Image 1 (cartoon, rainbow, N blue to C red):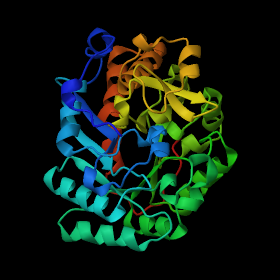
Image 2 (cartoon, rainbow, N blue to C red; image 1 turned 180 degrees about the vertical axis):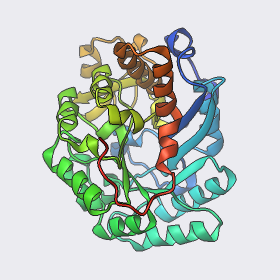
Image 3 (cartoon, rainbow, N blue to C red; image 1 turned 90 degrees about the vertical axis):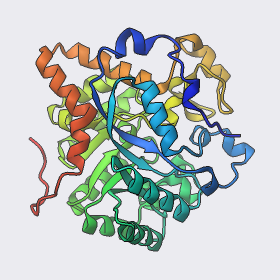
Image 4 (spheres, rainbow, N blue to C red; image 1 turned 120 degrees about the vertical axis):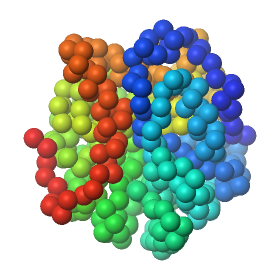
Length: 362
């Protein structure tokens, strides 16, 4: 059975927040990656599916999200959230999008991204129209490989993002929250796909979830050397990324200071562990707690002991802090960069578009 964590279970397991993060995290936070949905829109998760990290959580309410934000980031003000449904093949897509419309009507700080059917544009158009009829709007789209009934290494982005969806998004100037397929943005075919979308649909901005994904840090470095980071329409969200060297390489690219987004991936950011790769289980986590998908051999081989781990969202913050500390910026410049990453850059995603074609940043 999947987990349903209550904010009352919060624990600063290793004192990371109290010891290092509380004095460092800015007062305002925009969380650029959150899943919301009620349990009744999700079908039964079978035993085999429970052994996948992506099925660890299947629902989270607006109230639970707010509770977790308050417990994880005390005394901080969460001014905005990018939220979308849980994109599992068991979900009722239409019902999940209807719930998100209700959330947006009740919570103006939530920028909802609709869950897109992987092959049929009609449900996406219906959700868009339903939001407008309710007096709100969707700000972006979340397509996902699992809705095809395939694994992430068994399909390409074009398989679950039809051209008709891209044309619709371009017409409505929507943001694409993209979880890459395959091994992530170190893959040349994925780089080619993202470049073609940016150049062929100039009114679509792309947020690469988990900084584009990678299995090894070298794959992110190859992505960083591709020239794609020069495109002003490409943003990176930090969720799950716990490798300081990845942030250090990203921070070397000055335009990314304006296009990097803090993100928790709640409730998945509550997994007590750090990202890892397992030959048996694929992209998982080394964890403090035991999950249905925990790889014991990976746990034993990890240089980190389980009792050194805490919420993934805290490890993300710590890795970014480590990389930023390494820059040695003057205090005022560092504070400005933190304000941008934790808040301002996400706000820029939703600024009014100009009629001019987007050009690469310099």
